[in-house]
Length: 207
Image (cartoon, rainbow, N blue to C red; front, side, top):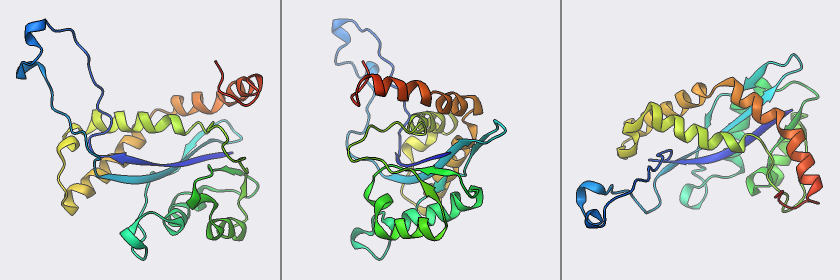
């Protein structure tokens, strides 16, 4: 089974806030404060998939930087953006008969996306509406952001030039490759336990 998802990675994400105690008179001291941006930061949408094959070997697709659809208003991400990501990241790694998971995002369930999956004979799991998101790859996005900050902390102050964004995208790919296989294994093998907890809770969040 191949678990896939896409995620928006913003500039400056992955920074872990450190909390410390200060004296009352230090409350407004500039030396004890750190300025952080509060507005929405520029980002890149990425797609990836993870799996464990029949021999127990961990696999991961390349981290695909999704492209905006220039034919649409505001050049947002569309089903065409999604299918380009699947063409680059899924098709080279997909074998007949494997199950492929994706959530119910609109670009995933669009007619053009469904038709593309049928044409390429990709077997999918249909998620019910408003289903809990149990896809293990969801937990890797936080790790990816932290790895990006760990390997390339300079990207917190990146500008908006094409060269800088190219460096940012390369940093994302490097961070994706740096995620250890044992973490992917741990997440995928946790599925039976989490599904059991989900069943015990009758479809609600487990306490």
